[in-house]
Image (tube, rainbow, N blue to C red; front, side):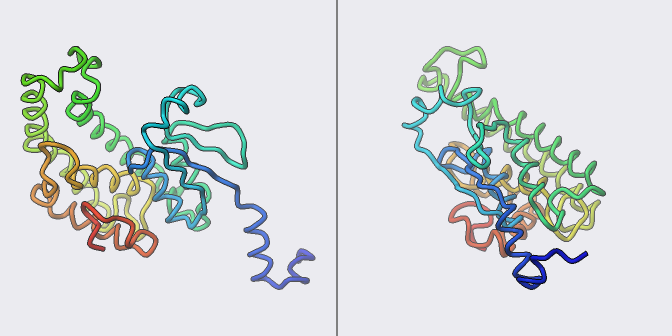
Amino acid sequence: KVPPLVICLGIESYRTHYSTMTTPKIKLTYFDIEGVAEPIRLAFALADVEFEDDRINFSQWSELKPKTPHGTLPMMTIDDGPAIVQSQAMLRYAASLDKTDSLYPADKMLEVEQAIGLLGDFTRAWQPNLYLAMRPHLFGYPEGYSKTEEGQAKIKEMRENFVANELPKWLGYLSDMIDANGGTFLCGSDKPTIADCMAVATIRSFTKGHVDHVDADCVAKSNPKIAAYVERFCALPEVKGRYTTGLGASQ
């Protein structure tokens, strides 16, 4: 049976009306950096979903932190509802709004989850090298350690060692995954999934020149295939022109 609104509005107007009526009001709050919110932002962009990209300054965090469920960002609200946290949940939610079902296709679920798991392992392997400078107490060092001569030397040693010896390994795993799945994106499709949103954000973080002792060209030098993959993703119409630094900025 044809809905009455189709008769009144015509099919295209009906689709527009239905889309407007069912699109939720989304607000995503995070710092004014890419970080862990960037995969979510990319997924919304690829799904053509409008959202409020609420970017706060670090100076605002002390006031906002007690108002968050777990004292963390990113944080999301949907239709002014209760605050939602955990970036992975938000990423999958963004995929659920994709009308093409290409961001998290049912027939590629295992491939997508495997890639996301690998990227999580990659991130956890890198984190001590990054956060020793910011939160040394988490790694058994005293506050202020990163400002000491010993601390600065230790951070330099760890980061240079990771880039030289560990980064090629992780990029190689991702490159092998792309090759095994057709050579375009991580999960065997001509369209990216949320795994690619996460991968591109993770890889780009090594290439923006903002981390001491990490050469901005380290990815391109270590694995040209991965560099080309990031450039390919950033050339997508929904992403093109988004970045001004790092891999993909030339697109």
